[in-house]
Image (cartoon, rainbow, N blue to C red; front, side, top):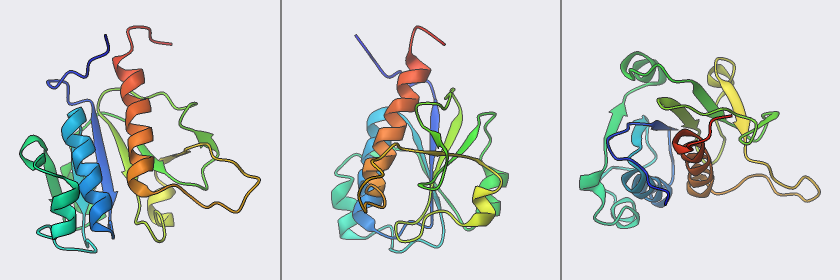
Length: 163
């Protein structure tokens, strides 16, 4: 049986300047269910008391470790981890299936309307979720993308067979 160990602080999710409250609420719920830390980099496109944010996160907020940072620089200085930092970008050439995730890794997601800025992408390993390239589709919803990558990382971290 597969089980996520709550005492393993295995991953960190960073939302850089998120804009849509229900997306952040859904990601908070994901983090509560998987024992993953959530880090929010300001400015946020909403207030943390927003009804849509709270509703999407249900009553899971008590089971969640969430930290806020006033800037990217403060996050970089304040997030103490020895893990790798991965930027999620539709422009990346490396798939999440090619990435090697380990406990302590940081998954960085950008704002819904514009993605991560160049000054962040140039300093992190960029990965992407494979999608079809024969249609004019741009990206997945932020909370869906976050879930896919989180569970792929947790699958690798918690697998009894390491490649």
